[in-house]
Image (cartoon, rainbow, N blue to C red):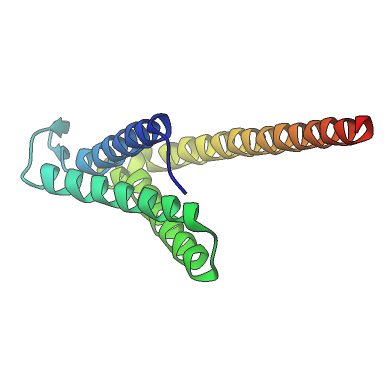
Length: 154
């Protein structure tokens, strides 16, 4: 099954954007530190290493997804679930890692704010998921009604 040029270009943009985002997320962990005066930002040797690791993780994840073009198998599905779970753990780790820089007096406030953000983002994610499912079901029903209408004409 061939992939047309527009699909190939879209995939490149998708992989590149995700690699830059995930690399930037991991790379940013090496930039922030704490001293007597508070937070400070400085370049550290770990930034390019973390960036490269994040970018490679994102590229590998998309490669797993693109393997489904050849068909679905149980092995591919298990690999994708494991990779998705691993990326989720890494993302939560990146979300929680900066808590070490928050002073103990303010830590509970920050945890409460982060928990609120997690609830709101999860709710929006669920709404987007349900909207996509609704649109897919509606388009499938429309295609079926068009197909049955064409069969009646024959």
